[in-house]
Image: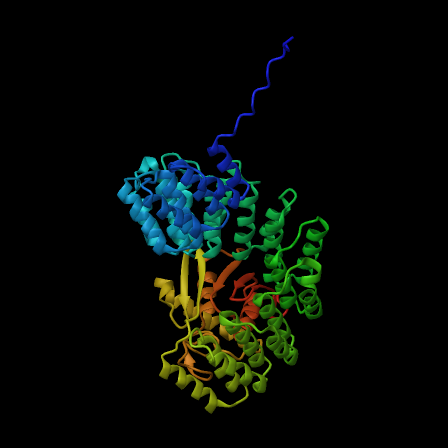
Length: 565
């Protein structure tokens, strides 16, 4: 008697498109490629799916080779294919390949498509071709620009250190964005732009916008705010933003540790690091570099060396050139120059990293007047054919510091003969959301108040001399070699240093009681450091200076760096 039960139906095979996409999502590209190669005449969807898988797996060149193979097989790319190809070029930061994809997009008639255009904006931005990115962005119809498009253009400016342009674009979004509300990625980009150019006032406005939009607790924005407030000289605000993050992850912890390091709060940075590790958050190489910086700027040399030696065993992170450079700098600051030289030799660093390392050691030798080691470090610097201006100026200053003016002049003459010039020192101050940039000896930025600034500096100089100051502030002063342009050396009369000019302007235009914040592109010199301390007593105001290495908070005759920088 036949069974009444129905025969079991064979299992349905999964459609190949779903199987291919599943393999790609899991990163199983060998299996994905095997399935693809077994297909007869795969259409554009299969080709694009495999391309996306390769691109997502970090195999961008293989993804782009598929585009060429697809066209040779007679299959025409669609909008998703070309945007995927543009994204692959973005990962490679290859503008040449990106232009080829752009040309294919134009030929295919997809250049006006929002998805394709946005991918091209992102690609050009990551490849450093910001003007090309803006041309694509401007070529989009206004209604086609969505949050992703605006965000890509903002990121292109921010990633290429064009902070003022990013801020201007954000202003355009607010006025011409057809009511589009900025998302957390746009807000974090413009906050990062404010950090890069130290635009505190605008950064605070963006922070307020984030709060009004209900995104104040977003971690992406919070991390950008921590960095922005720190770089604008407001560490206390950075800490407040960090403290409001619920269960901070690696990036917020790293950001606040780096901030504490730049302000010389070494022990506080170490406490934050211990807290992070206790919370089960694994540090990365940037975190450990921040901790080393904290040790360097706070004189915690033995603690820093112990961390350097235990990075591999404790955290599974091998020291990289940046870690060794920081450790050499740390030993040099402490005057332990023989150890610094031995570590520099042990590191076996090459390329630009080596130039940074030997420049750091050379600077320490100059500070501690160790001409013997400075000569050895200088010989290493001379092995490089580019970016040697800072090292040569340091070498000249090292000779000058021990009275060997003939050798110092010879180095300067060699620089002139080779056409090597150091970037000029500049400082800037923000007044009512407008930056004012001052260069050494050039006060034209003060406009109609130029004479007032110089008169104020002359008056301050008189009061400072009563307290034992022997430098010059007003109409002329002697350069110490930190902020010259490569032609003048110690003992030559040059214009007043840029941070002094910025401070004088700030004292005139900023109301009493407001902290004056000055940003500088070079290391602050010893004379200016002493001048700021004295002026803070005379005028009874607080100053914050961000120089090339760290922050200095001057208050009632003392500095937060404790004269260790």
